[in-house]
Length: 514
Image (tube, rainbow, N blue to C red):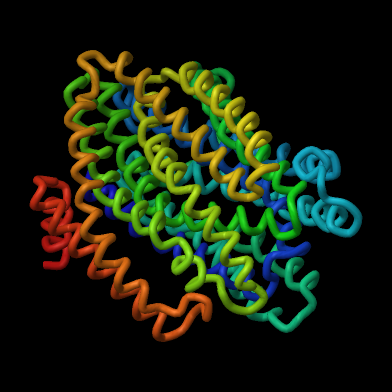
């Protein structure tokens, strides 16, 4: 699992770095205003569909099904099942793209009721251009599930970075153009990058599986029908998660100009921090825990979950502490240039601080969902997802008029934390013998305790920066030194408190270097 996690996290990390470069490039030329707000809102539905058709729906249903087919009938049957799923995916992807292009005005009315005039028209047109993106990412997620089952994680996690690379190139080429021309170039670049990130997954897929052809006998196969049913359930779970995004962006569209962009940039930074770790751990966990479930190995199931949770915690807890105590240096160093003003930095930084509980809770959810997928207990996920939607909507309606973007961030943090607690309680009673949560809670408390001396030293170092100036050699040096020294102090404190995962990771890195 550690090997799988490191491969997945390196690929995810490179992809997220490229994604961050994309956000910084767009912030530099577009700032936080009408055009950027329109692009963020236009990408809402393609991004949402990407998650619950591709990331959530497909891998969550495909990996356990392929593991079970291979355990019961061998490699040939697992490959045939993959071909049948590919056929269905092509049909669904094309249908969704066509439907999204046709229904774009109604979708924008729904999610961005506060947009009027030119801003509304631009959002509708961009939505139509961007919607086919979901077709490409669905194919990538299909390839990712198959490659993960074979123990290959790096390329499918790196693939989304090709989209970001295409956007950065488009921004660079059009940087002196009118903002409207820039955003059109970006939209086209998203589609070009989508096609490229499918193509780079093909060589490893053929290497591990051979050529997988679409099959037209899908509905006659009981395994495929079961995958389709389970994918529908997982897609519904994904919809529940993404409705939270829709609700909060709807509320943001009624706030002041730039609110959508401030909220988007804050969530992207959180996603960057937790995604590298939680996505990597979750990707490594799903094949291992699906195999244990298919073989009825209860001890292996429990051990895999425990190791994954501790591995995520030892890396995410210090990242959360860093963001919580130093939100303005994080935002200023990245965004305070070009059209992104100092007020934009302040608004984004306070929202980022409010999103720290969301970051930790979302990471926990990404890990804890995998056992539910492996056990095919998706009804519980649907119920908790519905609870999350209700909480997000009610808290967002209550807090956003009083706190603006900070209220949206706080609402998301509170509702996501409540969902994580519900998942933990349900899984504890689902797995025979429990999950060993007492020991896990003690270790997480030790990790939090280990951040205290690290934050104290980093605070003194951060005070030497001049963050209102944005990126500079001084600020970059102070930021890097604070992170390095704080990280070393945290690692030493954690090992002194008996956190074994750091020793394991360090040992693995040394072996890989040798």
